[in-house]
Length: 179
Image 1 (cartoon, one colour):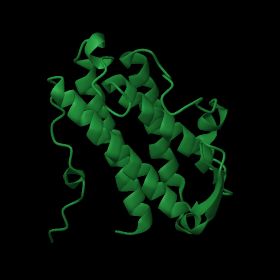
Image 2 (tube, one colour):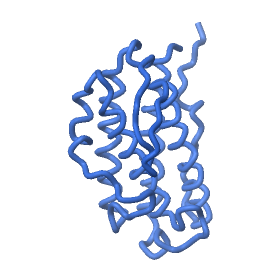
Image 3 (cartoon, one colour):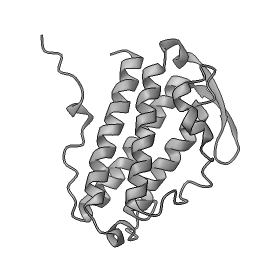
């Protein structure tokens, strides 16, 4: 599997898993979703919200790539999140709709990435304003890894609240290479 295929697989996994997480979350009452469960971002809603915020921040950075991905135009127009834990949407239904829109953007965007784009060194500032320059492919890998990390936390919180997310392994989406 080449780098482009890997990124596209990760985008598919991202969308698939987010669908499963939100299906489970939507089965729970609002008070359970917003209850402080002593997680890094407090609640199930807080954890899912953080993923939306972080994805938005990274997509806005990726939108500065010289390839000027038209698929990221809607993200360019979004305001920069004010913090990593500021609620984007106050309820799970609104957050789910926002998540679905982001996932559609991500899926379309990765289809437009060319292999040569991955070797670019992207300049950006982190959330504290510190300048950085990093390999674009490595940043996309971090982007998807960050999602997986926090989805694991959300899966645990959902399980603790009595919701079953089901199969979560990337292996479920890796094509079988049997001849």
